[in-house]
Length: 138
Image 1 (spheres, rainbow, N blue to C red):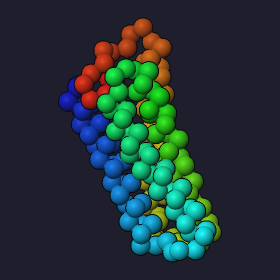
Image 2 (image 1 turned 45 degrees about the vertical axis):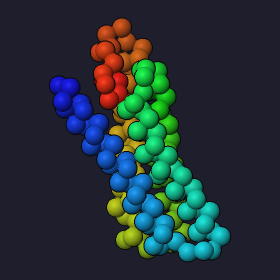
Image 3 (image 1 turned 45 degrees about the horizontal axis):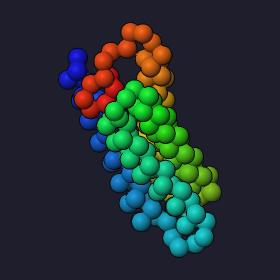
Protein backbone atom coordinates (compact mmCIF):
# COMPACT_ATOMS: atom_id res chain seq x y z
CA UNK A 1 0.00 0.00 0.00
CA UNK A 2 2.87 2.40 0.73
CA UNK A 3 4.11 1.95 -2.84
CA UNK A 4 0.73 3.18 -4.17
CA UNK A 5 0.87 6.14 -1.81
CA UNK A 6 4.37 7.08 -2.90
CA UNK A 7 3.37 6.72 -6.53
CA UNK A 8 0.37 9.02 -6.03
CA UNK A 9 2.62 11.49 -4.21
CA UNK A 10 5.19 11.42 -7.02
CA UNK A 11 2.51 11.82 -9.68
CA UNK A 12 0.96 14.78 -7.90
CA UNK A 13 4.36 16.35 -7.32
CA UNK A 14 5.06 16.07 -11.04
CA UNK A 15 1.62 17.44 -11.94
CA UNK A 16 1.99 20.51 -9.73
CA UNK A 17 5.48 21.21 -11.10
CA UNK A 18 4.35 20.75 -14.71
CA UNK A 19 1.36 23.02 -14.07
CA UNK A 20 3.68 25.75 -12.77
CA UNK A 21 5.98 25.34 -15.79
CA UNK A 22 3.02 25.44 -18.19
CA UNK A 23 1.81 28.67 -16.59
CA UNK A 24 5.29 30.20 -16.90
CA UNK A 25 5.29 29.32 -20.62
CA UNK A 26 1.71 30.62 -21.03
CA UNK A 27 2.61 33.97 -19.49
CA UNK A 28 5.77 34.26 -21.57
CA UNK A 29 4.02 33.41 -24.84
CA UNK A 30 0.52 34.86 -24.48
CA UNK A 31 0.64 37.90 -22.21
CA UNK A 32 1.93 41.26 -23.33
CA UNK A 33 3.35 44.31 -21.57
CA UNK A 34 -0.01 46.05 -20.93
CA UNK A 35 -0.75 46.82 -17.30
CA UNK A 36 -3.74 44.46 -17.03
CA UNK A 37 -1.65 41.64 -18.50
CA UNK A 38 1.22 42.30 -16.08
CA UNK A 39 -1.05 42.37 -13.03
CA UNK A 40 -2.80 39.10 -13.88
CA UNK A 41 0.48 37.53 -14.99
CA UNK A 42 2.09 38.34 -11.65
CA UNK A 43 -0.78 36.88 -9.63
CA UNK A 44 -1.09 33.80 -11.83
CA UNK A 45 2.64 33.08 -11.74
CA UNK A 46 2.72 33.50 -7.96
CA UNK A 47 -0.22 31.16 -7.35
CA UNK A 48 0.87 28.45 -9.81
CA UNK A 49 4.46 28.35 -8.58
CA UNK A 50 3.24 28.64 -4.98
CA UNK A 51 1.12 25.52 -5.50
CA UNK A 52 4.13 23.51 -6.66
CA UNK A 53 6.34 24.84 -3.85
CA UNK A 54 3.77 24.21 -1.14
CA UNK A 55 3.07 20.69 -2.36
CA UNK A 56 6.79 19.97 -2.32
CA UNK A 57 6.93 21.29 1.24
CA UNK A 58 3.88 19.22 2.20
CA UNK A 59 5.44 15.94 1.11
CA UNK A 60 8.49 16.79 3.20
CA UNK A 61 6.46 17.76 6.26
CA UNK A 62 7.85 16.57 9.56
CA UNK A 63 4.44 16.31 11.23
CA UNK A 64 0.81 15.73 10.35
CA UNK A 65 -0.02 19.23 11.53
CA UNK A 66 2.55 20.74 9.15
CA UNK A 67 1.26 18.53 6.31
CA UNK A 68 -2.32 19.71 6.89
CA UNK A 69 -1.21 23.35 6.89
CA UNK A 70 0.82 22.96 3.69
CA UNK A 71 -1.96 21.11 1.88
CA UNK A 72 -4.37 23.87 2.92
CA UNK A 73 -2.00 26.37 1.30
CA UNK A 74 -2.05 24.18 -1.83
CA UNK A 75 -5.85 24.35 -1.91
CA UNK A 76 -5.70 28.15 -1.75
CA UNK A 77 -2.99 28.47 -4.41
CA UNK A 78 -4.69 26.06 -6.85
CA UNK A 79 -8.01 27.83 -6.42
CA UNK A 80 -6.38 31.22 -6.91
CA UNK A 81 -4.64 30.03 -10.09
CA UNK A 82 -8.04 28.85 -11.35
CA UNK A 83 -9.48 32.29 -10.59
CA UNK A 84 -6.78 34.13 -12.56
CA UNK A 85 -7.14 31.74 -15.50
CA UNK A 86 -10.89 32.36 -15.44
CA UNK A 87 -10.22 36.11 -15.39
CA UNK A 88 -7.99 35.77 -18.46
CA UNK A 89 -10.76 33.89 -20.25
CA UNK A 90 -13.58 36.20 -19.20
CA UNK A 91 -11.70 39.38 -20.14
CA UNK A 92 -10.60 37.80 -23.43
CA UNK A 93 -6.98 38.80 -22.78
CA UNK A 94 -5.94 35.35 -23.99
CA UNK A 95 -7.46 33.08 -26.62
CA UNK A 96 -9.78 30.53 -24.94
CA UNK A 97 -8.04 27.61 -26.66
CA UNK A 98 -4.68 28.76 -25.24
CA UNK A 99 -5.86 28.32 -21.65
CA UNK A 100 -8.59 25.65 -21.73
CA UNK A 101 -6.29 22.83 -20.63
CA UNK A 102 -4.73 25.01 -17.91
CA UNK A 103 -8.16 25.93 -16.54
CA UNK A 104 -9.12 22.25 -16.42
CA UNK A 105 -5.87 21.28 -14.68
CA UNK A 106 -6.29 24.08 -12.12
CA UNK A 107 -9.80 22.83 -11.30
CA UNK A 108 -8.60 19.23 -11.03
CA UNK A 109 -5.68 20.19 -8.78
CA UNK A 110 -8.02 22.25 -6.58
CA UNK A 111 -10.35 19.26 -6.20
CA UNK A 112 -7.48 16.86 -5.44
CA UNK A 113 -5.91 19.20 -2.89
CA UNK A 114 -9.28 19.84 -1.25
CA UNK A 115 -9.93 16.11 -0.88
CA UNK A 116 -6.41 15.55 0.42
CA UNK A 117 -6.82 18.35 2.96
CA UNK A 118 -10.12 16.92 4.23
CA UNK A 119 -8.60 13.45 4.60
CA UNK A 120 -5.44 14.74 6.28
CA UNK A 121 -7.45 16.92 8.68
CA UNK A 122 -9.68 13.96 9.57
CA UNK A 123 -6.64 11.78 10.22
CA UNK A 124 -5.06 14.49 12.34
CA UNK A 125 -8.02 14.45 14.72
CA UNK A 126 -8.48 10.67 14.58
CA UNK A 127 -7.03 8.31 17.17
CA UNK A 128 -6.48 5.75 14.42
CA UNK A 129 -4.22 7.73 12.13
CA UNK A 130 -1.52 5.68 10.40
CA UNK A 131 2.07 6.48 11.39
CA UNK A 132 3.94 9.26 9.59
CA UNK A 133 5.74 7.85 6.53
CA UNK A 134 8.78 9.13 4.67
CA UNK A 135 7.66 11.27 1.73
CA UNK A 136 4.76 12.85 3.57
CA UNK A 137 2.07 11.91 6.02
CA UNK A 138 0.18 8.82 4.88
